[in-house]
Image 1 (cartoon, rainbow, N blue to C red):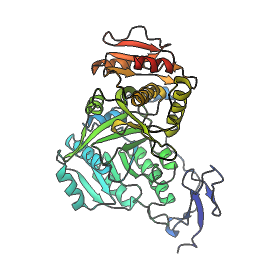
Image 2: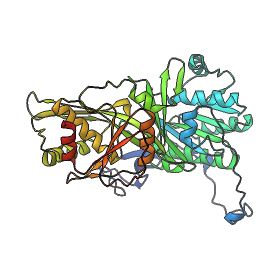
Image 3: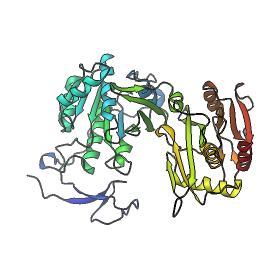
Image 4: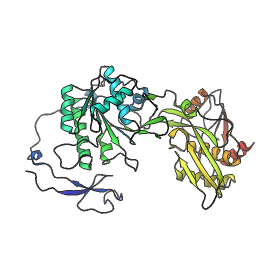
Length: 456
């Protein structure tokens, strides 16, 4: 018989336990992060603590370990393989998170179909859809998915047993929030169930060899639902992002033990599934109109890949009250800093203007190298004068108005030259001595100088 249930309050951010509820976690300081969890283990799962067993693998020197790693499983979805670092590593645990309806299940079903076509046995375990519903989605895909083995199950022990019986080399669990283990009390999706299921799948992957792909739902705060330890357990964390109203989807790696982090893959959502975008720069600049004020182009480094991104700005007279500051894809605090620098160092006035900044394509500006392009777009909008259509802007702006150099400039300029850009505004201290012959470097020392050059 099961004992009397015992409850603790567990922090969803750091996983720390507290005996009673409070508004703030004592371990990490997060507010409103404590949730009640029943931690009583079923009687059948209680076993006396045993002494450590003898045997097991002995410790080895690293130089005695075989250097030849097992070949990665290729999905033939070029952008998916690129973000993972070349394909799925056998025995790895990958977490794919994203907003509801963004296309996570479609992406992984396409991967399963292509893996089966390549001879890699795959099990697709869904706790949210029946096989009939999965079939309806599979019929819409361009690639045939009839060979994929599907399992509608939420009990983790059955999923693992079926994967072992099938001899699957890749297992998809959709989603980790619906899985549960019979050894723990509590409903699927609570902190304990999510953490324990992820830990058991990790052990299954490491000991038995199959790669496991988990689907994770995203909360309204933007993080993956469940304890933060979920992201620590897995080998790779991928975020599938994008606006539901747009065709483009972005797959971003925020953790990867087997490749580069911050790599980005771009997909296009179509009626027949997700299609990899081989040339993201061309896709993001496809709808750009030259000769319109408030538009500037910069080159971002997403991992090891340069991407050309258009930044749009609109400054208009405020109708009433406090002027608005609205940004999409750019941190609003960074926008406030740039507006203050332009007012103080370049002589522009935004106190009576509403300011709107948009990064085209759903991308996010996370590096300061885009500061110069944001400033150029704002200057262009205030003066209602378009920047040169073949110009690229690369530079970080300091609080004194100085324009600083950026890293990996050669790769950014090479990508710009490939798409027809012939002039690049960069910091005056840029040390690049041999830029591409097609690109003229315009060195800018101060943001005020940028304002004068764009007015000329």
